[in-house]
Image 1: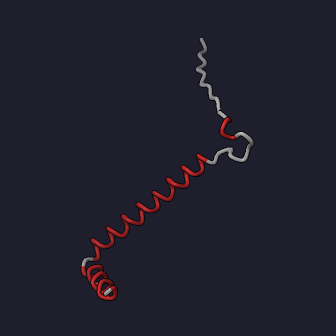
Image 2 (image 1 turned 90 degrees about the vertical axis):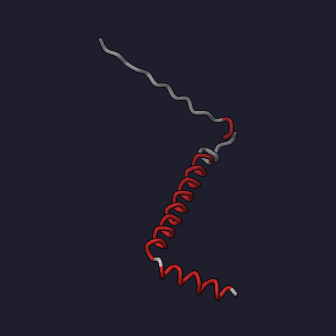
Image 3 (image 1 turned 135 degrees about the vertical axis):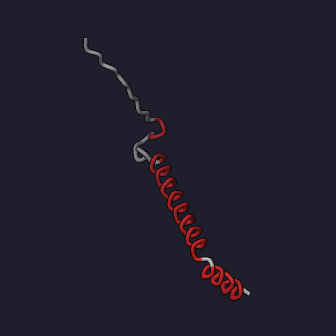
Length: 69
């Protein structure tokens, strides 16, 4: 049964090459984006996690505008 499904799938891929290329390309790009976003989120969540009490660490930023007259 699976062999028939694979044959049908292969025939459809060969019959409409352009449509298949767009679909496979879109799937590949989508998977790559999901992996990159996942890696970025993982990196952000594990920042400074090797310190003791890392959940209590905060970063303070200050933006100062200097004007010269």
